[in-house]
Image (cartoon, rainbow, N blue to C red; front, side, top):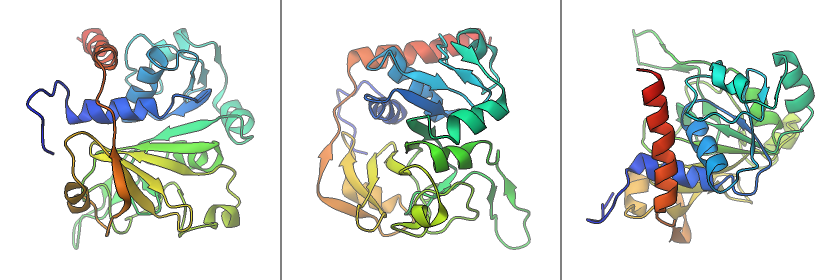
Amino acid sequence: MNTPASQTWTTDELMEVNAARALAGARTCFVGIGLPSTSANLARTTLNPGLVLIYESGTIGSKPTRLPLSIGDGELAETADLVVSVPEMFAYWLQAGRIDVGFLGAAQLDRFANINTTVIDRGPDKPQGRLPGAGGAPEIAANCGEVLIVLRHSRRNLVGALDFVTSVGHGAGPHDRERLGLRGRGPTAVITDLGILRPDPATAELVLTELHPGATVEQARAATGWKLRTAEAPTTTAAPTAGELRALRALKTARKADTR
């Protein structure tokens, strides 16, 4: 990335801010832990204060003052409008299609936005690398109105073929979700530290449509494990504002202070 001399943000902050902006019009968001949680909480504290954050542990309308450490973080329940059982969360709220946006991370992502968070093939004569696993991600990917994905852009993460399919994005291509009986629209945007990828309406393959300030098409292609297609003229995302950076850093600082 070509870093401007006057830049006051990191590439992670650029990614997190743009991921938060993707939630501008959402009403409800089923939040994955890690980068998705950072961006969802930033969205709620800045551009979308009415956003209802929902976590897999059964908390609805959580309003944490710092970034939660996990879905079981006590502050999620203490600040929630409602806490329900996990079976109710999945059967009534998620599988019934009552949640607008699912926000997920990934260890591996392929060109059709399918996700692996289960195992990594480490090569011949080596045991598989175990990852955190599926959790609620397959149901989130299947049933939310749409899915946003946030992850760092590298050949390690954006791969030509997944080692394991944990959560279906667009399957093998267009209309695969309908064939599989999945309720939602699936992934509509993948936000990385280099730019934003969106599925082509005709092929469902991810296409680079936007670049972050300082990033280049060549850089994004070199960091992708398949032949990355790009929009004819990718646009450039807006730089983070002082207010967005201040809010993001406050959330992170509060978590560090709480874990000392």
